[in-house]
Every structure is written in C-alpha cells, then in structure tokens.
Length: 404
Image (cartoon, rainbow, N blue to C red; front, side, top):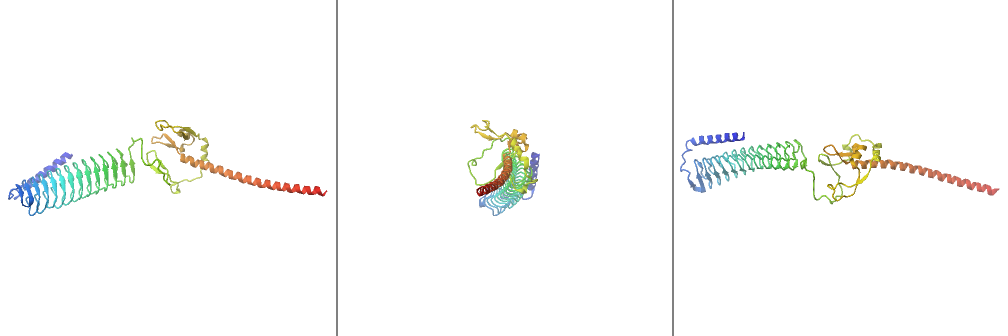
C-alpha cells in the first residue's frame, strides 16, 4: 500500500513538472543555464533559477530546481523540482521533489526524495529520508530522520523524529521526541511526549507528557497523560494517566542503590501489591467503611504458632536466623492475615494486621488488670478498715479488763 502511494505521488510530480515544462518561456532560458551567474549564483538544468533577479549565492542543479526564486539568497537545490516554488533564504534541498512547494519558509534542510515536499512557510525544519516531513506546511523547528518520519506533520512544531515512520502520523502535536522505528507512530495531536525504542508509544494519539523508554514501551497508551513506562514491552494501559511502570513481567529481581542504610526521620512504610504496584497504607477514616470494634476477632492470635527459621540459601546465602510465622499455617487460622502473589498462592503474612490484633488483646488485658487493680485497692481499703476496727475493739477490751 505504501509503495502504491509513493508511486502515485511520483507520477503526479512527474506529470506536473512535464506540464510546467511545456509552458511558453519555460523551455527557452536566456542565457541558457550553464554554470556560474552574477551574484555568486550557480545553475545547471532546465529552468533552474529561471526567475532569479537580485538573489545571490544560490546553487540550483536539476530540472526546475529553484525555478521561482527571485530574491532568495544562500539556497542550495540539488535534484529535479527541488525548491521549485522557493523565494526565501537559507534553504537546502537534496533529492527529487525535496522542498518543492516551499515559498517563504527559510532555514530548512531537506535531504531525500520528497522530503519536506509540501512545506510552504515552515522554518528551521530538517528532514532526512524519503518523504520525511512530507506534509509539513507551516510547522517550524521540526527534525525528522528516516523514511516517512513526521510525514503527516502539518503545523506541529519542535518535534524530533529519528527512525522509519517515527511520528509518521503526527499532524499538530508539538515538542515530541521519537527515536526508533515506529516510535510515536500513531501520534496526531499529543504534545511533549518522549519515546525511545522501536515501537515506543506507538499507539499514542492525543496523550501528552508521556515518557517511554524501551522497545514497545508504552505501546498500549492511547490518550492518557503524564505516564512513564520504562523497559522492553512495558505496555501500559490504554487511557491511563499519572502512572509509572518499570520493568516487564519477566523481571524477577530489583536492585536500587542508595536506599539501604539511609535513614529518614519520618515517613510511611511502602507496601507492594501482587501486581507490583507500590503504595503506603493510610489510617484516615476518610478512606474507611464499616468501622467496628475488633472485639474477639483478635483472639485468632492465640492459635498462631511463632517459629524460628532460616531462608533457603538461594534467598539468603548467609543463613541469618529469622523469627516469625509460616504463612500457610496462618491461613488456616485466618485467611485474612496472609498476602497472596499474582497467581493467588499464599506468599506472606500481614504482620501489620497482626500487630493491630496484638494491640487489641493487650488493651483487653490492660483493662482486666485495671479492674483487678481497682478490686485489690477496694479490698485493701476494706482490710485496713477491718484492721482498724479490730485494733479499736482490742483496745476497748483491754480497758475493760484493766477496770476490773
């Protein structure tokens, strides 16, 4: 399909140039273009630099190259139809049809057949490769290297595309960077995206502020914003926003330097969900439903069996002595106290929940102790009263005896 479209474009260009060549005055140039001209101009080829008046230091080599240029300066056109409509300055076109439609756009560089073909007023664009920046008309400061890179861009500016069909469908999106075959290939209006790797952010259409690093990274993102996907085949989820994903499902070990041994004064413990999502636990009632006293639920603790153990050597070669619980045993006591992996298998114990249950049992025992202490205090007071009464009775009895 792509070859058929390219053939159609070539045919149309050749037909247009042939018709142009038959226009009276287009066939007879006086003097005939042959080398150097005044003002530092050089022309070789039929109708090359045909309309030049005061423009200087232009070089036109090829059929109709720089044909319309009158006052433009420092332009270089090499190939049939290159810079055909140009009147501006500082443009360089190499390859048949490169910058053919450019009129007033300046400081453009096109290297490749049909590169920057449709550009009219866009400035400071650089295109290298067949049909690179083909449809660009008014977009500025774009850079495209690779066949069909930024081919559909019309008015988008500040884009960089390196690789076959990189940013090929982008039309109005700005400040995007795509490196790799097909990177940001479906982007149309998304802005400030960065995709590095073959097929990175390939499906993104209107999403902005996304970063993808790795082959096919962010490949499922379509319209979401502010995502970061790092790693081969870290696809992301269509439409999601504000999400960071690092590593694909084949990753088994993660090592991050600069954390171990570094102390911070405050913060929250980080939890890891079975799908790899990181987060912290909140205790605010704003996020809780069905709040009830724990009551007897914590009595499950009395059925737990604390053990000592060592991890297997592939986990801990040193064999450090450990203290804790066996998750499978805990599951039998209370399934809500275990953590499962992504396959649903028991993997760990929710020790933070065990701590809360311990607190509940401690408070219950504490209340019992307070009650017992109050009872003991009452008994002690009564005992003191009894002793005082007994001592008083004993003293009274001695008085009676002494009187007799």
